[in-house]
Length: 410
Image (cartoon, rainbow, N blue to C red; front, side, top):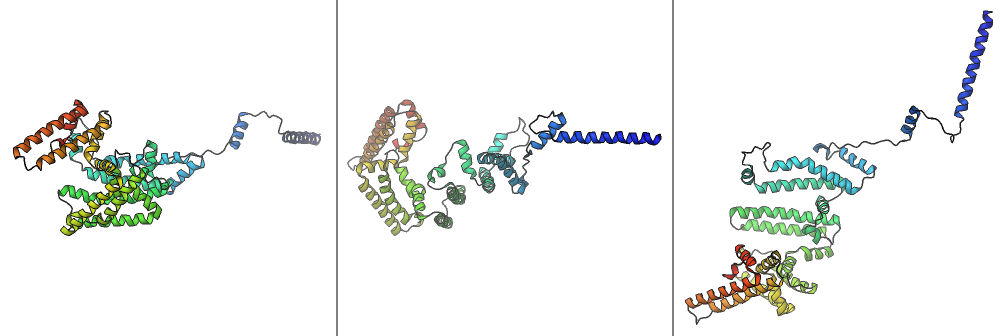
């Protein structure tokens, strides 16, 4: 009896097992298109399997990481998620600014904690050498520039200008070069400019002209700069560079101010000026002998005569006017007080007439010294009245207070 019951129980268990196996097999054969009722656990699991992995990018920039693989990896992650290159550059520059801000603040020697009784303005004005601040600030910017170039291949100076909507002296004049070449050339120029500035600071501190050794060193730096530029630029590019950046071209452009010159007029004056500069710019006028000085003055007069002949008397007069800083000052004055631009030319004309008449008076042998003094005084009074009438009382008073009207008394 016991055996029979045992066999019956085994049969029941076997039946149940068979039923469970069949049911599980039926579940696996349900077509994919038939909806399944998913519980919370199943949904979470499916989402976990289907969702792309989430990459968490962190930016814990420390100075030690700037040249490490970690920083490159960070940039790589930004690129892997499709971050635009311009945005990556903005991020890197902003991070560098933040990282180096403490060093920049330290340059000025500001107190860590400020109290109202501290004479902080006087301390910053008198206890900090602005030249040292400038040098260290320049060095920090150079470091930033190198890091940005190494990490994202961009020029920090150009990126800053583009973000601020600006174009500087170099950027506008070197636009004929590619951005990469532009950066290369401007760094050469900035390097030698910084080197020469140190000599100029010495001249200012000593209150005396640079000695022969210093001037020779400056001329040597100028030759080295030309050699570097010659290696960086093709002959055609060097020609364009000279038209934009050479002292000869800058002198001519300055002189052409206010005459609405043509390209041909520029080239005419430039070629003549360049021939003179090529011969004499490398010579130190202070150390020329009497014979050499006379030769230089003869060449200078020949240059002016040639320019006058090529431009014509009327245009040459405007070219001479542009070389006079008084005309530039008058143009700025007209702009400041919203006067017609012709007023600058009118007042400058009074200057020329006054100087010519004064010269005639002083060279008149028939006049006594007292007569010359009285005549000169009358010329000054007449000139003052004419200039005041042309500029208006307010602009004239400013012109006098600014010290720019000294020519009237000369």
